[in-house]
Image 1 (cartoon, rainbow, N blue to C red):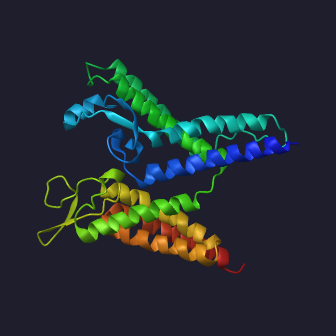
Image 2 (cartoon, helix red, strand yellow):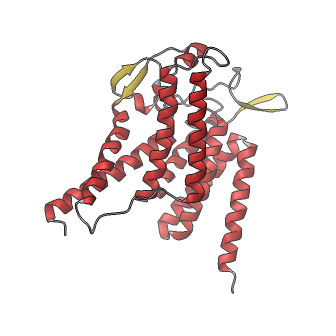
Image 3 (cartoon, helix red, strand yellow):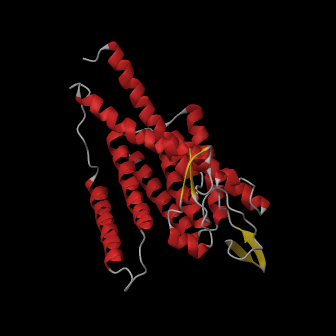
Length: 296
C-alpha cells in the first residue's frame, strides 16, 4: 500500500505526465512550428542549431537556424516523467500495470510502415552519391526522430489512456476559428507568432480556389496547407461527435458547437478528398448509431 507522501508524489507525477502530453498534443496539432523556425516552439529561445534539413533548406533558400524555445522542453519533460511514473509503479504491486504494445490491427501495420521507413533510410545511405542524392546526418536524425515520436505517442495512448476529448476540442476550435477567419478575410491574420503563413491569394504558390476567374484563398488554419488542415479536422470532428454522444448538458452542446465550427472550416478548405472521407466516416458512424438504437 502506498504511504501518504508516496501517494501524493505518485498522483503529482501522473498529473504532470498527462498534463505534459495534453500540452504537447495541443501545441503540435493547433500551431505550426515548421522546422523550429516559427511558432510557439521557438518562443523564449533556449538553443539555436543549424538547419535540421540542410538539403531542403538550401533548395528553399531558407538556411535560418533552428530555434529551440522554452516550450520545446515540454516533450523532454514528458520523456522524463513518463518513465519515472512507470518505474514508481513497479515499487507497488497494486499500482503495477502490464506494458501494452497496442492493438494488433494497428501495431502490425505501424510496425510495417516503420520497417519500410528504416529500409528506405538505409537504402538512401547505401545508394548515396550514386542512385540517390546524399542523405545527411541531420536529415537522417530528423526522420528517425519522427518515427520515434509516432511510436512514443501511440504507446502513450495505449498504456496511459489519457483523456483526449478537451485537448482535441481545443485543437479543432483554434484551427477552425483561424481557418474560417482567413477565408472570410481572404488573407492571413498576422498570427506569425503562432506559425501562420503569409497568405495572399494573388501570390503564386498560395493554394486558392478558382471560380469565374476569381482566386479565393482556401483556409489554411495554422498548418502548412489547406489539405493538411482538412486532414486534421475530419477525423477529429468524428471523434468529438462520438464523445458528444456520451456527454451531457453543457459539455455536449459545447462539443457539438465546436464540431459545427469545424464543419464550416472544413468547407473553407475546399479539400474534396477530406469532404469525401468525412462523409464516409459520418455515414459509418450514423449507421452504427442506428444499429445500436434499433430494437432487437
